[in-house]
Image 1 (cartoon, rainbow, N blue to C red):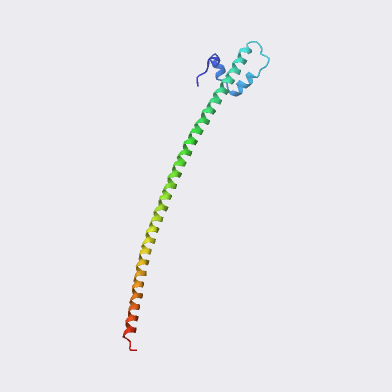
Image 2: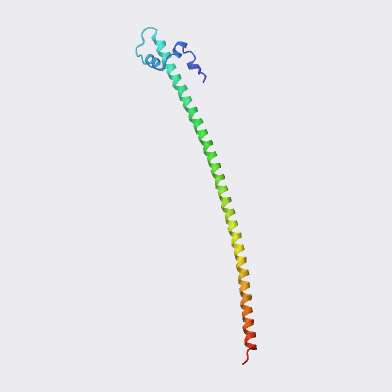
Length: 135
């Protein structure tokens, strides 16, 4: 991140201080001699680092949210695909069951037809038997 103009004139010495040294230097209240500029630089450097840190955190948060959204979308797409695959499997099983039921109904109808033919045959035999029987 490039430094904006208001932070450009901070000395290199101040830029290399640790956070603890910056805090200590920026908290001096009564500047003595040439410490005024040093305190101002330390405070400006601390502010710059705070801004830089905040920007990094914001960038990290945005990246996390983007990645999270992409992962969620991927998960949802895979979930929909699994649901469609499952529905297709169930539909195939239902179709197979319906075909088996249709075959069973067809065989039952043929059996009923044969039973009816058998009953008709027995009726014919009974009628013929009663006509031929001596009275």
